[in-house]
Image (cartoon, rainbow, N blue to C red; front, side, top):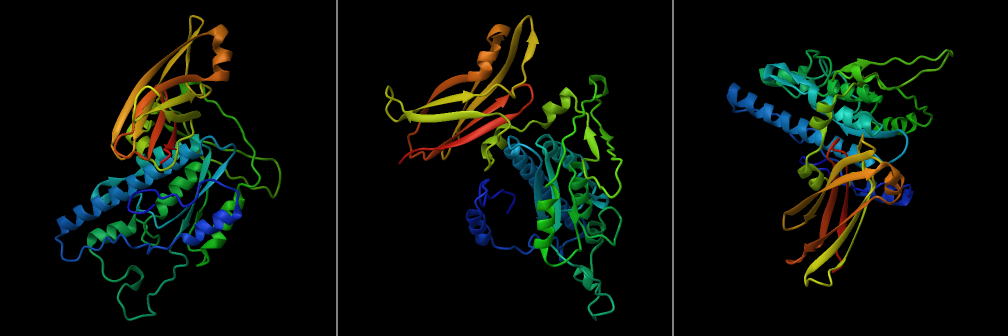
Length: 374
């Protein structure tokens, strides 16, 4: 993530050559590039400046993690997401900021996609400089304002760097780990995170409907065998229908995400519209397996939105498809999906457009970007 946007270095692949090439193209950034220094500002100005910066970082991080989770939703099994970061404080009480609700929402989206987050502190090994240099407060880069001190303290624990509590929160809620102050060889922490999910078991747990209270609940798993340690999500979220609506991504987010969402499967193809010059005929097929359908009066019913976004023009066309399938035809519809066709104006040198399918009931979505032949 750079400047609040997600940059894709390489799509999912098991090709080592492609991965190595993509990694070599990456350039490291100074983890303190987004400075919170407030010299020359009044205390009020400094507080406002720092608060705005922290809110932007927290919301950018939340949206990026959710976009990654939506992209990995269709990949089977447990996924390990490695987050190399200095993060941001989970709470800054002096500024009236508490990012726990936003991080919990991000954790729910990661959990729904079976993604465990592993946080690697980009600062590497940190040692105490006190007494080793004449520079005052060298550990924190010199004297701090009261606002900066509040940020440094995070949860009121000055021995921990800012951001550690946020890493611990996300890792704990998703069943991952935090690598902090281990060594300057960050690749060792990354290798450990990659191999951590090599051996996994899947356990199903389904709370009763009356237990869905919209809160987090503790989970505990034990094995009767010495020398065996377990790592798993320490909590689960008993979501209500209102929570599902609140958590759903907006159409704007889905259209702007650089990664395709895979919660719903879809296929799309484009060809010149023979009846309209300068138009492209787009055929879309949406799979219904992960669409929530109500069962009533021997029918399955629901609805999906199909949106077409023409890149470069900002034009968005959305159509709602109502679904009403008799029980005796349901198996056939699951096999073939549901189809729709739209004619898109490509005037003005359009190079690509994006198709998004979203379930009305749950917000689950699938998307694909279609390049146009020049």
